[in-house]
Image 1 (spheres, rainbow, N blue to C red):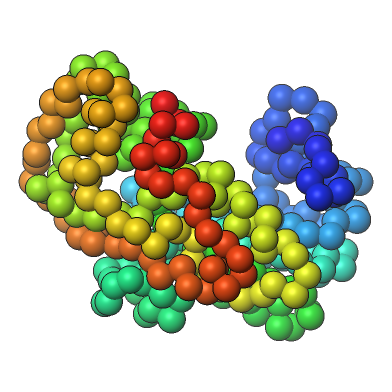
Image 2 (tube, rainbow, N blue to C red):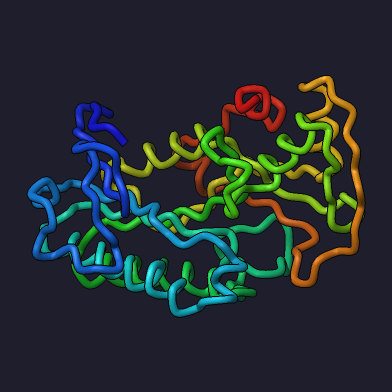
Length: 275
């Protein structure tokens, strides 16, 4: 991420790898204090997006998952408290909820993760909120639902279903749907997520917020929209449902709307931008 000006602030990227001098290259599982880079000494706000995000990987290697998602978060929180950062924005996950007990899912919904990944993201969220209370720091934890973005590569194991479906469709390959395709998700376009994060950087905003559209779409509806936008005829192959897959999920975004957030992109609009 290049340094740029967002609302008169300089933005600095930190990642485990980088191609130039405009990113601080560091592994968050290693301490960030003392500073690995002088640019980390005078931060106003940290937006913490770094994570291990594969449910399957968390099942295979829970230790790696917890090191990245829990210890990595604590290392960033320690940097924040030791340098007087005023705000810490933690990007959590809807995976912390587990199987929905009611719909739509609001922020008070019970949290019963179904994987080490979901548990590690919930633990990271709780660490962030505790640090906020202990060290008088404004903390926001954002729980995104199903984000889709141009930067999700189809050959990446972390790619979402939208990216995979588009790749299959454009190559005239079969689209594998586990179950009957009537399962629902709350898909949100990445620009709406970025706008909500921006809202949360404002002074005084604290707490836990869902980040979604508040609307649900079935996988069959998703395929129909993609077929319309691409002019391609989908070759759908329905397979047995996978163990542990959640049937229905969508968010209540009343709390986010109170902050002035309103998604700008419908599912179709976001897909058109992506394509």
